[in-house]
Image: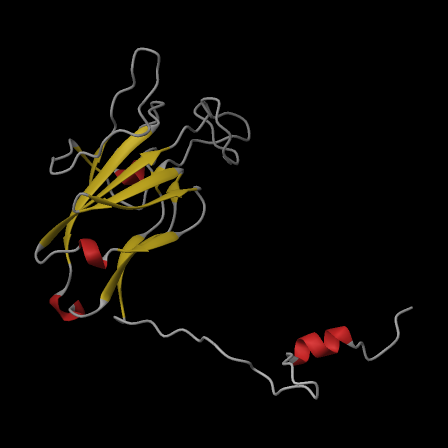
Length: 196
């Protein structure tokens, strides 16, 4: 997967809403799911850049034809915006939980382009975000940040129609007065034992 860390301006700021580098070859390669600060990522850089882009081309297996395709992210620290074939499909804020999106409408036959923009101001830049013990200048009990895509990313085929359980009518027989009431509501309204 290609990665790009745009440079900061003279004040040390980055444009967290920068346009994605669609159709471009990115200058570095990264091994996902390792954070850019990790040696295993192939980059091992902690240079206070809060913005990074990831790009990958992929094809959907032919045997997934007629199915929906879900794109899953195990975790991205901290704010992620995702494009598939130039269309923004989702954004997510929070570096410790997973998220997913149905990308079926954006897919095309052959090669597809996935771009992820990640904004992660580890030491805050005046913003509040959970960081645990991460800091740009680790010492003592604090450790190096974990920025970017740091958990697995995968595609999943799902059925073209999802079955959901839904009840559109009453779930219990009429009461003697002709109204309908659920058993839970009846038992809650008439406790079986007196209250102290």
